[in-house]
Amino acid sequence: MPKRYIPNDKWSKKAAEEGYRARSVYKLMELNEKFYIIRNGMTVLDLGAAPGSWLQYTAEEVGPKGRVIGIDLTEIEPIDNVETYVEDITNIDAIKKIVPEEVDLILSDLAPKTSGIRDVDQWKSIELSQAVVETALEILRPGGKCVLKVLRGGDFEEFIAECKQRWKKLKVFSVEASRDRSNEIYVILWK
Ligand SMILES: C[S@@+](CC[C@H](N)C(=O)[O-])C[C@H]1O[C@@H](n2cnc3c(N)ncnc32)[C@H](O)[C@@H]1O
Image (cartoon, rainbow, N blue to C red; front, side, top):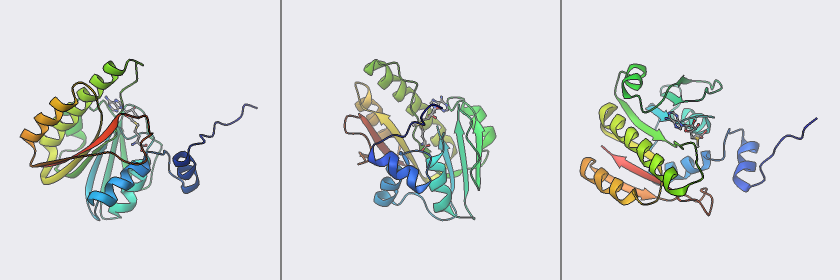
């Protein structure tokens, strides 16, 4: 029988021990501890949510009065008190049909399929981030927040400059659980 792959980095081990589906949950926990973004009773939309560790943690934080919706190109295994949909997040009309009301918080840990070419991957990440920002500006309630992962590179500064013009407040933050060599960074936007 083939051996099951067990990742041996500290965050993956911790996630497996604590019942989370991915190591990335610790990135969201750190962001939440720092910026207090997820609160009891909130409606939260997670874009690019598979396999679902952010959904698991968010559902715990919003509690039974909250609502958590996850969207991904890939099907997400069911999670208690979480709604999931298979959709391309760049299809804003489809997203608005899934979530017709205003939401309190949008999360995005989206990662494009990597090409291995750093500039191309970074450009694709910016393109996805732009789609998230457009959706967020349409469906976030006034005062709502959007937290998104972006790969830093050539177009990053231009993306940030554009966001600064359209959002009330912006913070750029790098989390401990990102791999050392990673160029990923999290951007927090206040509407
Ligand atoms: C790093 S994973 C997200 C991990 C997730 N935060 C978790 O904690 O389990 C990035 C996800 O983005 C999704 N994705 C990439 N492009 C997408 C698109 N255009 N529409 C929807 N999902 C997309 C991928 O399918 C992948 O599941």
